[in-house]
Amino acid sequence: MTSLETFRKEFREKLLDIHWQQWTTLGIASQLGHERNTAIDLEALMLSTLNLGRTDKRLLTVAMEWTMKNRQWVNLSRINRIARQYMIMRKPPDRVLVTREVFSLFLQCLKPALKPIEEDDASPGAEGIASTDSVLLAYKEIFQMARRKGAAVEPNLRHPCLLQLYFRGVFGINARAEVFLYLLLQKQGNSSNIAKEIGFDQKIVYRILERWTKAGLVEKAEGRTYQLSNTSKLKAILPFSLLPRYTNWGSAFVLLSRILAMNDAEPFSSDKYVLSSFFRDILPDARALARSVDLSFSDDRLHQGADYFEVFSSEMLEVLRKI
Image (tube, rainbow, N blue to C red; front, side):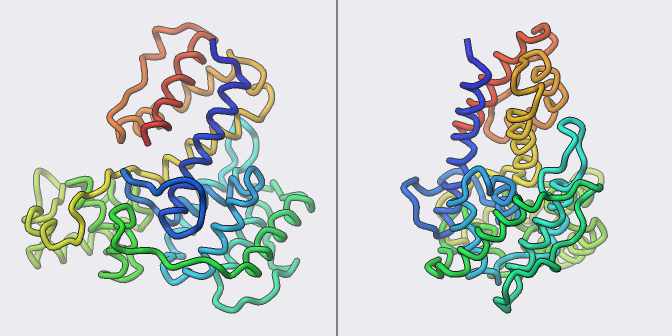
């Protein structure tokens, strides 16, 4: 039987491993190997790492070092959109994942000019929840340390899991790169679904799809669904023998961050029944993540009360192992 403490420890370790592997693929030095299966989403990874900052300070330090050196690859508009999910007041645990003060300091680090991080640069807390002085100080120290290191390397755009950055090199740091990546790996979608997943306004995505349709790059399938034309020919000109798997990391990292927060929040951290109720609430999002790695979650209706903790925790850890 899995204890709450065992699940908390294994979940945290596996979540950190995912982050270290993805950052290693981008170019930081670590003892873990590269990501080999899934396309990396830079902005989603950055925000999840920011949330994990005080859990693993070294991870955030080297990630910020890489980000500040390679800021030309970052889409600031997109990171602002994805960040909204981290700054929503959620019940439970009655707090945001990342406060506006911390996010403000993070954005300042992405500015070209390496000016000192000032107190006045922090903005008010999200939804009235502000960072404490100790939290802000901890993040400032991490960001300043990252600026002093200066040893990060540039990403290898020929790595298949960095397909997002490869297409940004082709299309620019804009929505076109994200739309093309989505259609290539997900096969098809309508403008609404695509916009929601990639973090751009639907009107922008719709205009891109319509222009590409007129140019013959994209064709309309059933209804309002779009797909790439001659996908096999497009794949043939890419410098990759195999394409990575697609995972909606924007949603996945928010889900995993919420589970991490609940593992440390009372009464969830000490009561399997209460934590099981939370697991039932997030089951639709968990199932979406599981589908991306060809796994599934059991029907929660077959497991009463606290018994569902054992089932969900086991299946979630298996999803993290396969990712």
